[in-house]
Length: 161
Image (cartoon, rainbow, N blue to C red; front, side):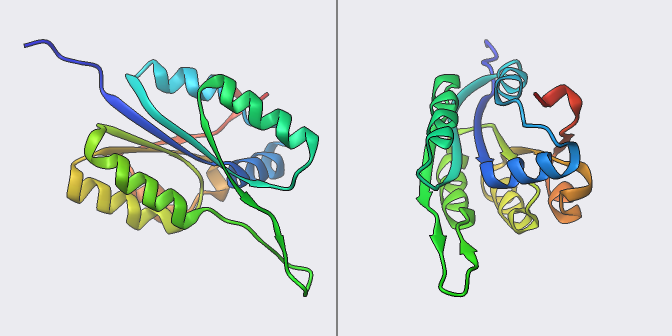
């Protein structure tokens, strides 16, 4: 029997990674190094980057870079409320996509520090026996999320531009 490479699905909460990396390191996340690190573990069969679309040209250029690496970029419009607050998260969309991918992959890789995803990773492991990896900025990643995954990878200088 020939062992095949593990099938991997990647889900990146772009806003979370952007703001936590910028806040902690004043640097940008290196998506190519991230991709290469994961690709070394098996076959990437799905890869999604979830972002908020504000319609500016720098953002469009960044989204093209992500597509060039291999990500499918999913966009939601930026919503400015009357009270001045903003809305735009992908928690439900990421959850739906992870649960849709889980039956067909061996490893789920989530780049986010959002503790709301802890239940999602627990459910994927219980129902589909998927392993999970979380990439997050150490002091800004929820303890529940770290506890829910099989492997936690701290974002540090090796994954920054």
